[in-house]
Length: 295
Image 1: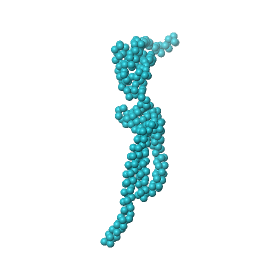
Image 2: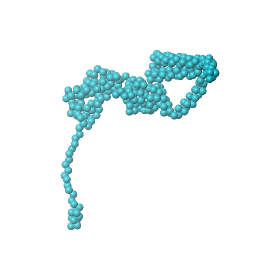
Image 3: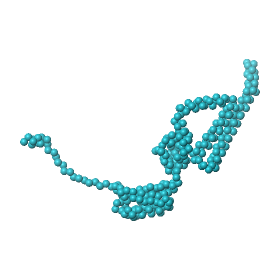
Image 4: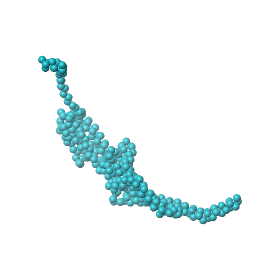
């Protein structure tokens, strides 16, 4: 028994003095390479961000975020492969295996790849950017982020919506924040017995008196149509995009107050109903009609 223990101890010492030291060295190098790769990936991300900030092209924040993330992860992945090579692992076989696996996953994840391709098209053509208020299909909200496979919106009531990029790219996108100004289009109706010129003057004064409504382009007031219950006007003014909803609500409020003060009614839908009285005439019994015919 003692001889077996002694023999095992000798073998263990021999392994530690040969293979063990080499393994410990490789593990230390593995950790150092990973650490260096992590540091280099952070530096690469910072350098790319700085280059974007100083660039005259001014790419979109979505594109900047995507490129910096990919560059950082790719740098760390390269460092990881190099570190595995120092452990004696055949990285060429590993890379070949990943290629075959990637081909198989490509067929299995074709929808994900479609989302990825659509995300690249969104980054390239920039129909919207981070912070823009958009309408995509039936969803409306502020763009929070764009991942490799989905677009993230935050709705006005603070819900998060993830839309697959393929549905974003293949759908109509309305961007309410793409330009610095927007036109407010209000429809206001007055009673038929009110004076059209007086109402036009009131609407124009409301637009001109509001400090957030622009003078250029000029506000516009036009008769829209002779409706079923009212004479309807288009009341239009240009504002900064950030002021749109504030001005929209204030103009509606001011229109109501000013029309009330001027004695101009805002009619509700009305219908005229004509009643006709029809005398009830009881038909003759069929038997009596037959008897009369025989007589």
